[in-house]
Image (cartoon, rainbow, N blue to C red; front, top):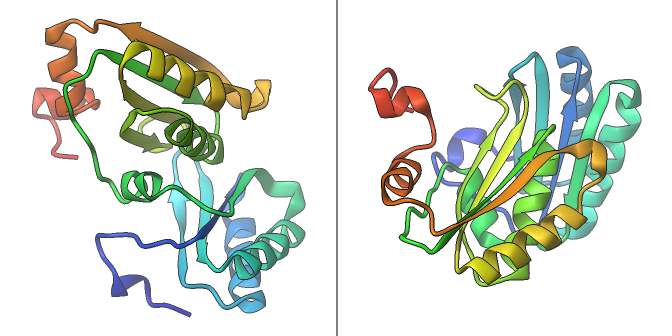
Length: 207
């Protein structure tokens, strides 16, 4: 099994990704252990997020990731909030998961707000593959009461297409809201491109 300290702070996942979200931390640790015992994985990350949930992310060959996902689901089905499997995850999604941002000037902003972390990652992957958009940022769980946020920028028509395909990939219970804002005001654009965290804008934190 790879040591998580091998590749900080970058994240390399190719080609497949799976992520499971558990409502119980104990169940999440149990499931993560079952996953790494079942399959030979290239990447394994696991830990707590707000509000008291546990995430397990794995990456590697498609067959191995599928087998690990199966083991995780079998280990604690009663505590599994949500999960995703992406056989060919987009490189921009991996970059964003590692904390990367692409704060470029753009005509429109698209936002998808989800109830779970897996749903946000799925939306990001579907949207970036659907249209010529930039994946500005993915924010997950912490500071969001467990929710996910995905920000796309680009031409209005492209952002609309990305959100349509991303939204269609989600179940109604996974979504909170999605919006397209054409011709985003310069002042708001500057703030969003710099940092979507209010505390960071105000100088309260550096995250």
